[in-house]
Image 1: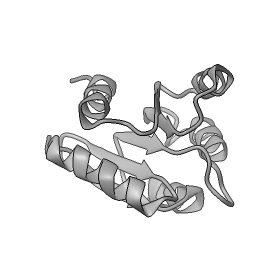
Image 2 (image 1 turned 90 degrees about the horizontal axis):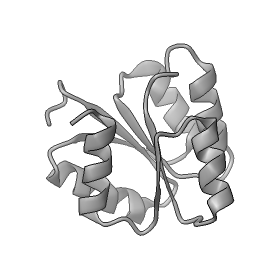
Image 3 (image 1 turned 120 degrees about the vertical axis):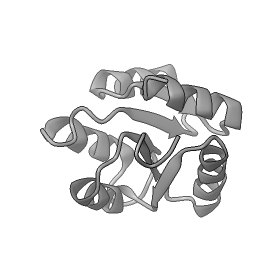
Image 4 (image 1 turned 60 degrees about the horizontal axis):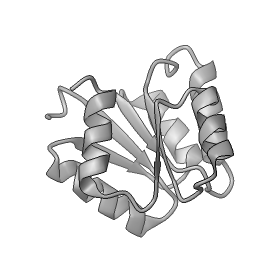
Amino acid sequence: MTEDQGRILLVDDDRQTRLKLARDLEDGGYAVSQADGGRAALDMLQSEPFDLVLLDILMPEVDGYAVLAEMKADETMHDIPVVVVSAVESPENVEKCMRMGAKDYLTKPVDATTLNACVSKCLGG
């Protein structure tokens, strides 16, 4: 997939996780931008077009819940699909994210095949 066909914003405060997920997505043919936290992600979403957001939940300052809530409340970002990628495995957390508007929920660590299949599904591929 080229940048013209879809752009992914990867949001995670852990650099190693971002690098691994970005590499897996780029190997799958996706164009990937990275944000190291919620505030940076919201700034990028205001200034650049994205077709999908991969969002960690547990981040300092602005967490993934706040990013998801702000995205779904904002008319310009409301329709961007969000896939939560989190180390939190509780069914309650999954349910909360889905109720807030996430399209899917993946538990870390995520293998490349699962990640790319989920992204493809969310982008309509």
